[in-house]
Each structure stands twice: as C-alpha cells, then as structure tokens.
Length: 459
Image (cartoon, rainbow, N blue to C red; front, side, top):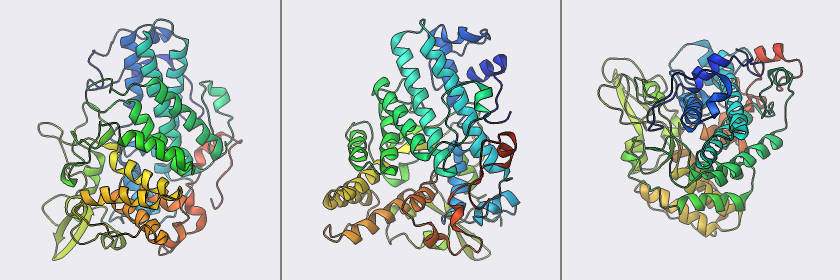
C-alpha cells in the first residue's frame, strides 16, 4: 500500500483497528464487528479502534516510533557507528542517504503516513458519532490528535516540507504537494492544544501506554521549543514538572517499565522482546561478537568522571583485549523469558527539565536555566559550578547536558544539531557529509507516484 495513495479497504482496516493490546484497556477487543460505522457506535469498539492506532507504533521493525529513531538517527548524527555491512544501514552511518533507501521509505515515511491516515479516519469517525459516551469520546479524540502531532513532528523534522493531510480521501491525498514546515508545525500545535483540552490528567488505563493531558503537554513543550516559542515552552514544561505525577529516579531505574520518570511508553502484547533499543544496542554477552552500534569516541569522552549516566547507561564488552562501548539505557536483550522489565519510553521527565532550561535561558533567565541543569546533574551525582552570568558557559552547558542526557534516544541529538545550526561542525568528519544531508530524501517511490511532490535539494 503506497503512502498518500491508500485505498480504504473496510475489512482490513477494521481488523487493524481491533488489533490492540490488553494493557491499554480493561475490556476485551470485540471480534464480531467488521462493518464500517458500527466501530464508532459504542465505547468498546471505539476504544479498540484507537488501540489499533497505538499498536502501529511498537513493532518488530525499527520504525520511527519504535527504536528506528534511536538507532538510525544515532548513526546519522555523531552518537554511534555501526559494525554492520548492510548497504542501507551504511548510508545512515555515512550520512549519505539515497532516495531509494528502503528504510527511509518504509520505516520513516510510509509508516508515519499510514498511521496518520488511520488516525484521520478515527478522528472523523469520532466526530460524526453520537453514540459514544461524552467522556470516552473526548478521551479518544484527544489521543488521536496527540498521536497525529507526534507523527508529523518526525516527518517534518526529517523531511522538511511534507504533505499535510487531515482527510481520508485517497484520491486527494495521492495528489498532495508539500506543505511548509511552519504550517505543519501550526497543525501540530493545534492538535496538541486540542488534545490538552480533551484529555484528563489521569491515565485512562493501567500504565502509561495511552495519552493523558501531560503526555500531550510534554510534546507541546517540545514543539514550542523547536519553534522558538520560548515562553510557551517554559509554561508547558513547568506544567508537566509540577504535575506531581513524575519523579526523576536514580539513573539505574530510569528506563525500567515502572520508571517514575516515564511520561509516555509503548507496549504491545505478543512482542517477544522488551525494547528495540535493547535488542539492537546490547550485544550478545559472550563470544567475540562486537556491538552492532558502538558509541563514537566523541560521545564516550564527553561524559564527566563520576557521571552515573555513564555508569548505568553505557555498556562495555571486551573482545580480544579491546573494550567496546555501546548504549545501555535498556539492558534487556533477546527473548522475554518471564515478564517484561522494560518498555520503550518515548517521553520522559528529564527532557522536560532540559526544555525548560533552554527556554529560560532564551528568556534571559540564565539563573533559572542553571537551576534546571543542576537538577539533572544532581541525579547523575555531578556537581554544578556554572556561573549564570557567563552566558556562553550556560548555553554550552545546556547543549552538553542535552547530548549526555538524551543520547541514543529518539533522535534528540540529530534534531538538536539541526535546529541549532551545529550539523556541519559536528559531522564534517564524515567524508560524504554535505549540508543538504540536513534533510532526508523524499522517497523515490513517492516521487514516481505523485508528480506534485518535489525532491529535497541534493537528491
């Protein structure tokens, strides 16, 4: 099925909608409803439909929402290299993507747009329904608007101007041209503000696998940071921090399933491993197999002595007398034997403190920024001796803390380098790097299907 040219096949779509996770809800997914609008004629089937949208994020593939951004953007930036020889992987490591790269197409572009199409279908179905109870309707609409903003965040930050659609007419979608990044961001903010207003502070089910008000607010704080809306970024990150729902644990406990820091996590029943990050980053403990994605020297040497994040989030394996370092935030590799102990954390409290620190700095509150950095560094057992009157030092400290705190995690480093203009300085060591690599190529398969699309410069 080609992105932006998706024909709505009713039975297949309903089946996908009803493919949910028992952890999301406390009702069984109905199996006897396979006709159109009946999905939005009662609470149980509507909830199951939205669970189907969540179920698109975690998968056995390295999709953008489930390990793909951590692994591939970690290579594309300056966090990890790779010992793998697969050509499509090497393109990421060398920052030399081609428009025919199947990972770019399938894992980032197509997966995101297919999810958006499904979300648009659900939003319209919910809006038109008069049978769903008001509280459930508000909750589900809020979740859909949040997830749509999440998808567009990655699309526009990776590809630049991208087609923007909130409709489900496949003929119209097939002819969409590119929409300016500013307009896509405006849609994201509208979606997230709506989600904030519709969602309750409480999570709608056990765990943190579905969106509540603060999940939407956390992503909204990030969007405001990226669009340089500093005051809003400070307001929204502060709201999350002061909610009382989240606490910074010791680094050793930060990425466990029950982490008090987690704001939004992914999960799906039947998945036989804990996380894609653990499965891909952590090498086999015995033998001579090297880590697939060892840390770059520049990242490894950026950790300060005594930093508990290095102790707990960086793993080592000695092969033939040489120590190899790898991302070890998630430690469980391979098949789950009894119960899962880790689930992917997409949004967490540490990022919110760093968002607020940067926003405060931009609002001429360097002392407040240093206060937030101190909280992050205290958790890592580091002292903080930053003179808030030295603005260059404060700015550099914010950049460094974001690199250390958020490394190998959902592409934060890549996005930070891009939005702060630091890509060329950081990546010029790569022989094939050129400034046009700041954007992914629009997939060639889409350019062939839709003549209204244009390629990115350099491809």
